[in-house]
Image (cartoon, rainbow, N blue to C red; front, side, top):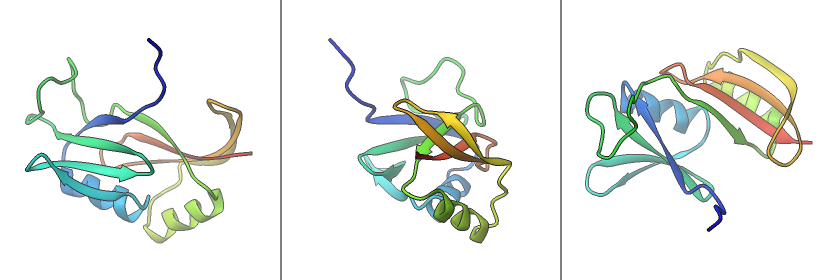
Length: 125
């Protein structure tokens, strides 16, 4: 067996509506309702499934906690990402700075989502 990709991940959040508003408005993701009443955020060929704290779906992490995530998303254009964050009144807490990604050198900016998860937006150099 070998792992070949990431299909989805799960974020535990305090408020699904606030989370969706941030990821849709500031990051351009698409909200999806699936399996009747579950919510996900889609981008590219991946998605983030959302669990509301205290109302998680089983099975779940041992200690699901809003604000414990540290995520890096690849963007086509870092300057355009910065402009989108500015337009959405999202504070950039660091960057642009040089970082190392899975396949090479990145330029990155950092912000936080409504739960305090660290969000890194990066462009490969």
